[in-house]
Amino acid sequence: MKLALTVILMIFAAQVAAEDLCPINEDIEPDMRMTESHFTKENAEAAADKIKAIVSGVDKKYEWFTVPNNLKVIEGFILKRDAMNAKGEMQSYHKEQFCEFMKNKAWWYD
Image 1 (cartoon, rainbow, N blue to C red):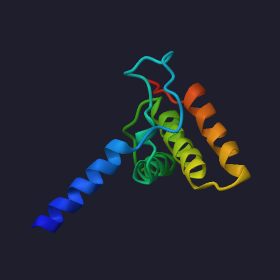
Image 2 (image 1 turned 180 degrees about the horizontal axis):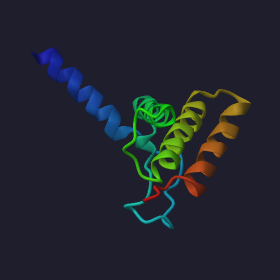
Image 3 (image 1 turned 180 degrees about the vertical axis):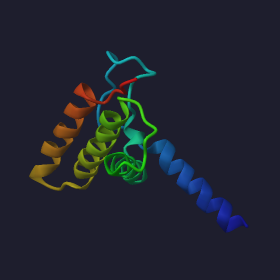
Image 4 (image 1 turned 30 degrees about the vertical axis):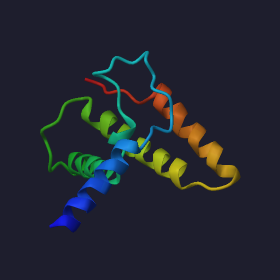
């Protein structure tokens, strides 16, 4: 039991200590702003599944903004993953690309 609690606390501490790669764009209203923490593999895969279902005609329950919002989730995840995994000279390039995305595209349509 102590081991499980220790593992949970370590995971929680790592998540709290995680810092954003880019400055927050204060020009985007907080309720419209996409956070860096939203760009996860799980969210990107769910977004891809939603788009696939819409394209195939299986999912007929969506709004006009569903596709562009889901595309942003996929793009943001890929850019963030590349920024976090890049090494050497490419590290600053990929971080710059992700931060540019966060500045100019990381907001929800509604």
